Image (tube, rainbow, N blue to C red; front, side):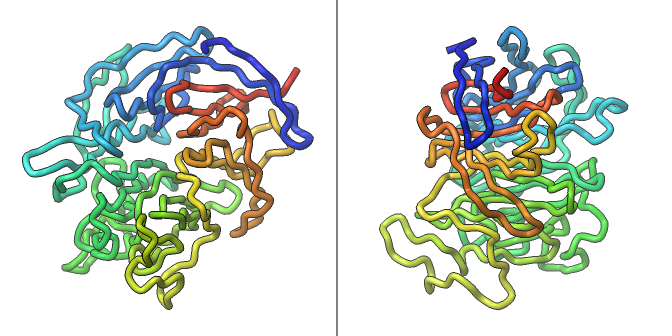
Amino acid sequence: MLGERWTFAAGTVLVQAKVITDSLATPSGMLFLPDGRILATNRSAGSLVLVDTATGARTTVEGLPDIYHVGDAGTLDVALHPRYRDNGFLYILYSIDLPGGSMPVVDRATLSGRTLANRTRIYEARPVIENGHHHGGRLVFHDGFLFVGIGDHNARDLGQYPGDPYGKILRLRDDGTPAPGNPFAGREDAATEIWSLGHRNPQGLAIDVRTGMLWAHEHGPRGGDEINIIQGGRNYGWPIVTHGEEYYRQPIGKGLRQRPGMEDPVHVFTPTVAPSGMLFYTGDAFPAWRNSLFIGGMAARSLIRFDVNGRQVSNEERLLTDKRWRVRNVIQGPDGFLYLGVDGGGIIRLSPRP
């Protein structure tokens, strides 16, 4: 309920929680604008929403085209250009419906009041495929390039096929063209925008600013959700290698969990937690949590925290388990507080208890 407050303890950390806006069905992507408002995607409604964090007032952003919002498709994520204050560019990853199927696309636009202006399609994840599953959907800028996580569109063998973007993490210039130095450039059988392959359904991308490493997580099938450190040209295994199994409890393929030439995950969740959203916390509001890795757990119905040491995670801690929320996303505010996107529950702010 809007404005509801309560306190809880997480080990030695005392936290105050407050519902700052409610009734968002699936707040998949969230970011702070320089003016202090949150721009959020409401994935299953196919919309973008501006949220006033002081009042909870929501304003629907106009100027999007028709969004395909079935299954895992919809308005997936948003990102700001690293020089947003100079150029005003924001990026939206969403799904569209076309004859024969659907596909994720990336648009670049500016925000004029409550309207997207100068909207330009800069990337299309072709070909279209006839389902709305595993669109993935994360954007993050790093070293001036835009990384895009795209799921396998429930066509699992595409994860190993270098000719299209499905089941891949992409690396683009800010205009949507392939970034220079991508590992598959020059191969006639490969899409030049690919950075890594062998992913099932990545719904988390984040940079550890201490090391500059790109981290990702992805949904496994029945079990086998993974946390990975992403490196250019590497193969992360799906569907040849997985720690999960078919939903009817049979092995996938040959049931391999390792294979030479394919990367081992940093961490595996079995049973599944259905991870969504990913954050390395760098703020001062919670000193005990500084440099922690936070992940939203939808099936786990909790906010998951890890200690991080280089390439290793440890001391898994699950927060807010009593609320039974499907935590869809977690971001850090300019105030150093944590903001959670919760399915059906809106946006929750976590601050130190006074």
